[in-house]
Length: 163
Image 1 (cartoon, rainbow, N blue to C red):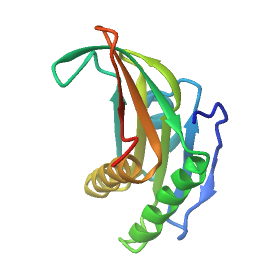
Image 2 (cartoon, helix red, strand yellow):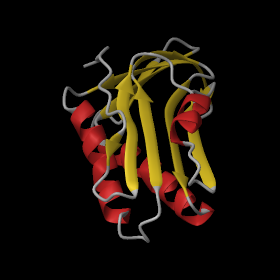
Image 3 (cartoon, rainbow, N blue to C red):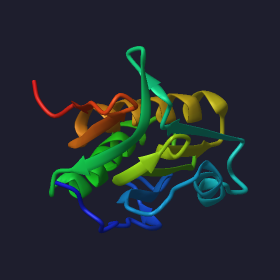
Image 4 (spheres, rainbow, N blue to C red):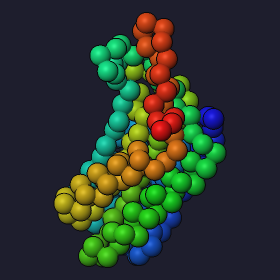
């Protein structure tokens, strides 16, 4: 089931004063690394780490023409919960300011379009890398989003839609 509604969690404080969840959404609109980086930059950040998962033109040796992402109706809340839980777990890592931005696209995407974008700013690079990496892994593992791949030979494949 696809959704065209983007739920925004904007400038919400995390579980500790040092963590701020700037954005944790699913979006039918384009997303970008530049947008994410700008949103998390601050005078307290010595590091900004970003990730952009983009639609590639192949999978499993087959040429891909485009993708479509569908989300379960609870996916918006799951996304917000995943980010909040990660922030809560890392809040005790020193109390330094950390800002988090995450968005996953839904709907039809073309080759080269960003599908998942995350950015984390922190006082030090180690924490920024660690939180960003864990954020990407958790979103991919926990948020109920399914990918439909359209191959050049006319076949279609669902990824993540079943066990």
